[in-house]
Length: 293
Image (tube, rainbow, N blue to C red; front, side, top):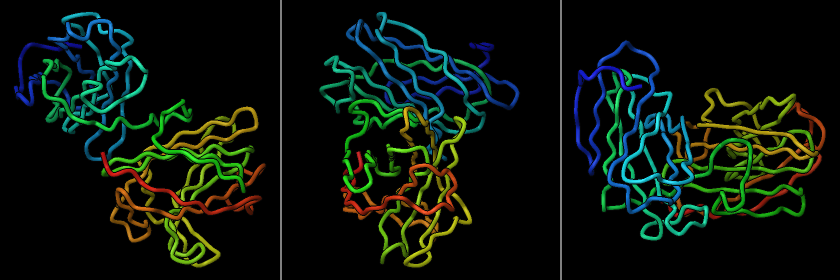
């Protein structure tokens, strides 16, 4: 939606001119007008929109082919008064993946002070930014979607992970239809670990953020710090994807850091969705976090 031509403000950041008109408070659609993209005609473009305060990804789109010099994308929802990080890249080598520049062309900019539906003018810049394109938290794990993965022989759980400087993205793929969970960086046995447990029942995901209060017990955090989560149960396999802050500042969350080697506790119940049901398999693994890009 273009709205009126009355502009509340105009700003220019790294070759991006932003213009948003006045409107009533609420959620709005913005029209992104791309210009200068003739060099990328026929190449795929991927774009995501992230709430800068919560780190929640609110939109992700794939344009299979850039049509030419100019084109438009309508994106929603944007909430008025909030700031959004916009990451996008051109798949220059056509491998279907994000590769850091200069292999792919990638950019980042911010949209803020939104006061209604309007236009965001995106002019192609020659300077690129490594945006560290993260997985989509949608309950489906695609090939090569995560930077890291391992199979745990003891539980049969496949663990995928990927992080930037702020957020850790994790997928757990478990053989069974019950709950599955992971506990990060325990002090001793279960003590001090930050646990995320999830289960899918009737197509609905239940997920909980917990903390190890003793060597044999964990309890639900007073405040959950799960940025985003999704899951599915299909073919006797449960998949849980979630994103959490590396360091939430909550005493009930164990802070993690880019590049850290982390012990993680895995557990699952093959048939029961109730988090109070005892695990049917458990194990411990070692994860090395990414450096932060």
